[in-house]
Image (cartoon, rainbow, N blue to C red; front, side, top):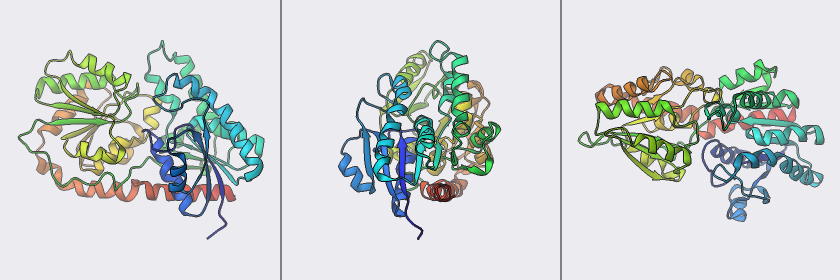
Length: 399
């Protein structure tokens, strides 16, 4: 084995337990680093049971405690803007004694700090982007996120690797890698990693819902502003009119975005829903196993086109027929998968695709479920993805 590295791992999200979205990836990346014998120092927000977490993952924790951080924290966007300044100072102070070999940033917010550390400490820096964070803001209301401001933020985020001449970039998708290259970053220094799932937590279901039960259309996630918009609302209207017994199940924290959507959807005749609230990652597959169709009704934006959406991976892994809007990142990977239908970017077509699955005989898709599940398990389980990512990180540090 080659000489272990001392890695400063930077994140703006609480490291453990994962809070959703891209935060799950950090856990598996750090596990892979530690298992290879690397000394990993995680710099991030305060977490519960920090000593137990440090022992479990074999890492050193350097925790930010000035204010609460996380995707559900109050005034999170303002906190995100200030956080890189303090993160940079934390790492620089630790580097005076630890002598790091690599700075590895997770997400764009910590990438700002990592870029400044590249200049300040003259260390190899790898920026990993599990999404185009500011790209999701394109679907936010103009009074919250004015379009000129959003475009400026996206330009800044995409420019970070070039601006700081970093040594490597991990990209969530081929589409995001393409955009980085178009901005002038060398393509040979980019590693498209994709976004994975835990194959042990999302096994292929062995029993299908009873035909006599009402069909269940499921969506799970963090329910941020870009998850549920006009496409989802219009799709509900189409399905409820044709299949009034259908139940829509929304699994995740009842955020302001979800509550707003449910308030509007209640005006639709025959709309029925379940909202069981937050469900731990390890228990999510039980919510999917009893469903009929999984949905990813994302509105079109730069952020959604770049995202390799975990939902579709987890739906296919459990053998669940899926409808997704035509996101460039996942459409290329799943375009030939018999469990996935891609709609246009409108609710009427999305609703028709749901109805197509509800009307399809089980015999038309169920024989393909095992092969589809096996493919994502082999290619998109966190373990092979993180092996690929850490291989790239080692090459970057030693180049």
